[in-house]
Amino acid sequence: MLKFVADWHGDISMDWRCLGRLLLLPVQMVLCVLKAAACLLVPTRLRDLRGDTVLITGGGRGIGRHLAKEFAKQGAKKVILWGRTEKCLQETASEIKQMGTECHYFICDVGNREEVYQQAKAVREKVGDVTILVNNAAVVHGKSLIDSDDDALLKSQHINTLGQFWTTKAFLPRMLELQNGHIVCINSVLALSAIPGAIDYCTSKASSFAFMESLTLGLLDCPGVNATTVLPFHTNTEMFQGMRVRFPNLFPPLKPETVARRTVEAVQKNHALLLLPWTMHLLVILKSILPQSAFEEIHRFSGSYTCMNTFKGRT
Picture 1 (cartoon, rainbow, N blue to C red):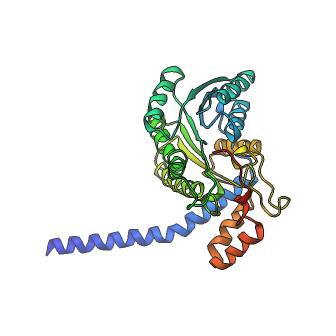
Picture 2 (cartoon, helix red, strand yellow):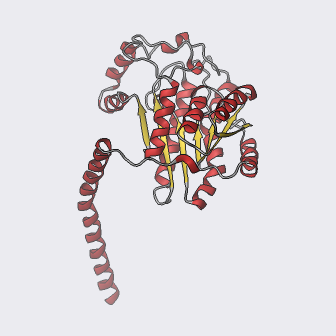
Picture 3 (cartoon, rainbow, N blue to C red):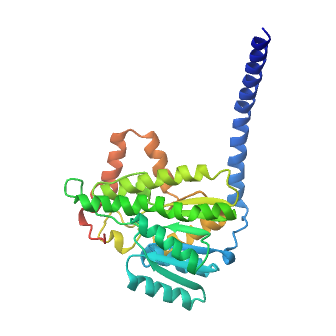
């Protein structure tokens, strides 16, 4: 009898706690929205990068090169470049050193797990602890599923998705120990709205987005360690050379230096998600409320349905 009464009181107490949390949730959500709105109006304190060591995968060219230059410009203590082409890494490292920032480069294929762990160890021994990891390396095959080579499809998944598993596992534990770190993913708006002709890239980026979403939530109770996911529209680099949309003046490609500048700013402001340009928020909203047939008409109108037909980019 006593056990029944105790259990009954316990259930009542738990019900009241659940009800209290339920009533508090809308208040907390409103406060979060107001806080976010206030951050748009009032300048937030930026993270001081002078004590940070930044590692950028795919740092030899494209967005990676501009990211390296932007982090150096904003005062990063050290910049580390990872990539597969030594000539590009050397050229970028030389530019960073001319800016007065210490820079190192390592040849590393992030799709190779053992190579990542080996080079991560070399980085710690030669340069020190990494406090900002930018997962930027990516490839695109640029063909339909039927026309795609199996090895090329695997390459996209290994570099664009699994590579982030290996690099994050290599550097995150030390960030958690130091209670100082930031994981950045240069993703793509194609993770949210795929197009034909880039099925390997879209799939890998969607997986990468889920990886970052899970990681970001997992870091909520980890003081000093945060994450940022960047979802840019088509960026004017050699990776997607030849890609064409129907109205280039209405949907102009982003400049890589703009993506780099906004990414570093997002890290300094500790923003979890960055969509570029801001109009991509409308795309997400429309996709969630429109029927599939209507969204297909948007693809046809914008030219994204056939934009990869003229693709001549770098894989």
